[in-house]
Image 1: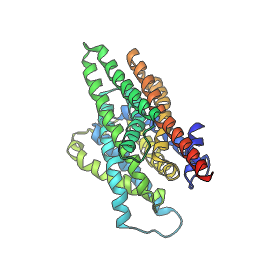
Image 2 (image 1 turned 90 degrees about the horizontal axis):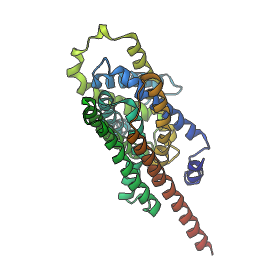
Image 3 (image 1 turned 180 degrees about the vertical axis):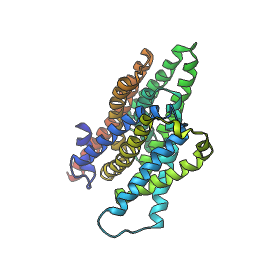
Image 4 (image 1 turned 180 degrees about the horizontal axis):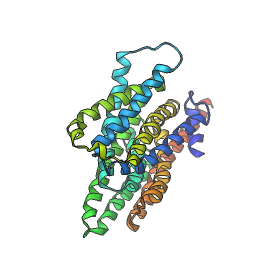
Length: 325
């Protein structure tokens, strides 16, 4: 509720609660994607799994774009703009996403990616002076980074386990995915200017899927396609439809009306959906130290993203009032 109060007055394109419903639905799909992706990489190489997810999602989006009412138009300029962010938010993000989920538990990714993405987004906007550096925001960033350090150290509590090294490596790969998503959220705001969400999503997903296909091509012949279980195919279909075609389209729709920082705030809902899904369907769990680190990171990230903006809004209101006097 507080997020909406902060940003509604700052974006004339916001039409009320609808953008936040789009974003919340997206986060529900994203949370469940960690669990489904873990199931898929159990039988398929991580780079091939990424292609199957986004190749299928791209085909669905192309069909929707062609079948929607009105004339079908094409612009190389729009393709290049949307394709550029697609290389970051679809190709790079999901290359690291599926790589990470092949090494570490899905439950780790459901914390690291959505919680650290707002931290990275805010840090970049502060460094580029697109956001004000209020004290609460700086403190929040520092707390968030400290919490992330504790989370990663939590993996090391099992130093004698072979799985601990793989889990730590996977968590670091998840961290790279978080950076890619932050860059995608920032860049997408510019891409959305003058483009409708369906077209932008289709172009971005299509270009990203083609890049994933090029990277995964050497691994394709190694897959025993006849041995892929029906359950894995069902999860691939779900990933292509829900967390890809629908989720990315909804994310673009929401991002069109709110700021990049606000959009990444909604990613705090992903750990809820992701953790519940991972525990119920995969039987995964955190170490006690990781739980502590996760709580610290969420608190710091939320402070950095929300309190700084509230302070900025208050400062702007006070300045306006002084000018009027």
